Image 1 (cartoon, rainbow, N blue to C red):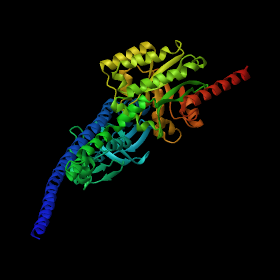
Image 2 (image 1 turned 180 degrees about the vertical axis):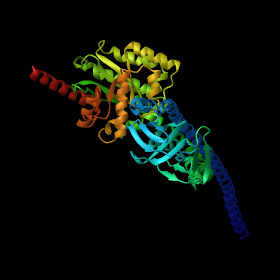
Image 3 (image 1 turned 120 degrees about the horizontal axis):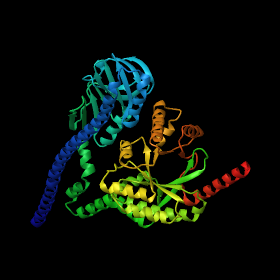
Length: 523
């Protein structure tokens, strides 16, 4: 009997001791993780605010540069200076409109030309910045106006709220982020509110610009520390809970989970699952097929066709985009070669490249191997620069583009007008084509500002003697408008969706047959 009693107390003691040993590291570990999470969130908020401050300073530097250019024109007749105002809208990134005032009277705008409206300098913080909740043209759409005055003359340059809200969303995708100008602030949803921006319960960081009268605030809502612990430290939580028995398994799973996407891309590349799709590019005047853009698609064995936006950014980040593009060029050459005799000389084949390609001279060999498959002059390879990553004008990049041009490869800027680097590419690289982003084409007949920008891009391409391609053409009205305005090449669902090779060549043969019938009838 005593043995039984003693044994019972020993079991209880061992259970209590095990529980105590388990609770101590769990509780102390959770406390450490909670402190670490709060500290990390405070650092992230500070970095977010710093990045936002730099971006908005960059936007306003562009506006200030435009204002300094046009301010000397204040007081001159609007008809004589309106083209200069519009040129600033085209040349400067982020600038939506450029305006001139004399004696506090707005009399000339880049959008309408001559215009009459009284202005009050008191609306501008420090006489310089005004965060507006829209204007007569775009009501309830945020607008940041930079004002520069010299005597009776003043220049006002506005930045579209789309750029401001987009920067807040992209930079503050994890933290909350606000832009404050005087007593007015802007949220990442593009909403303008009066008063001080709401504070943050966790890790609030506020920074003021040293160049312009605005500030930014970043931070996280209440409860974010616990959410961060659960999200970012699952392995450590598991380690604390199970004392290392499952630590190895958990670490292994986390490692596999973090590396799985890249490993899956590598597996798919080796299995030949990345295949080319072709979308026709037509001549606007004749509707004849002038070439095709080659688009990468992932034919997954179980998921089916995977959208490119789900794997291309990861491929660029991991560096696999280079061998994937090499494979795409090899497949494209093999698929086009049997049909090359039916192409008109100089049939354009467009392929997207990224910043990774521009730091690797192996692209020269890839292009050389591609062109070697065809008779000289039969196919014209066009490399389209995308702006998901900024291309640095390094010595390697300059050498690469120089040798590509000597090889006969042409360069196009894809989605021109949507990225802040497009204009810098025109200065740094010898560009042959501009591709108008489909967002501008879609607004033909619907949005005066977008059409104004579209016409400015077309005018710019003509002055620089560049070819121009309009993407996303879906309606006859868009086609006719672009043709009438001198856009040489069109691309979009109106002429054909991206298709696998077999379907593309079937459509190409039908197009040739229609052209032959048309020629026969005309004769």
